[in-house]
Image 1 (cartoon, rainbow, N blue to C red):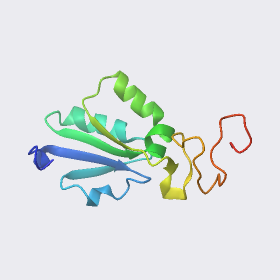
Image 2 (tube, rainbow, N blue to C red):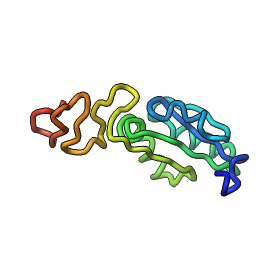
Image 3 (cartoon, helix red, strand yellow):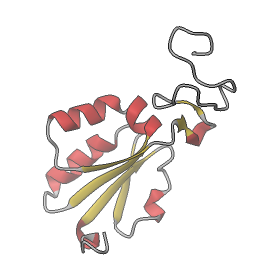
Image 4 (cartoon, rainbow, N blue to C red):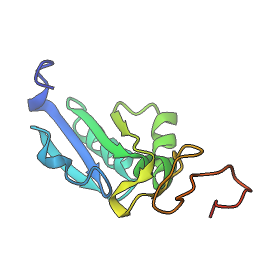
Length: 124
């Protein structure tokens, strides 16, 4: 943002989960939405302040699980927002449980033997 010169007109949206503390890491205006609702909050901000650069910073549990509908609909409407998707392949803020982005064979706290394809033992 510094090199692009947009700090003064950028607004970021964080939400519950891995990104909850990002308001401390960006030198621009920040707000927080409910878990998975970053794209909806960003849409509202962009429509009320179209001159601003509006972005979300979301983890995989936030965007690829709980907020799937939000991001799909924002994309379908061609909302003029930027979405930063951080994929750590687990629900990191709540103990490392399997997320939709957990890779097959990946071990985590809930699946010490590693994630398996759907229908095989070990998938909740």
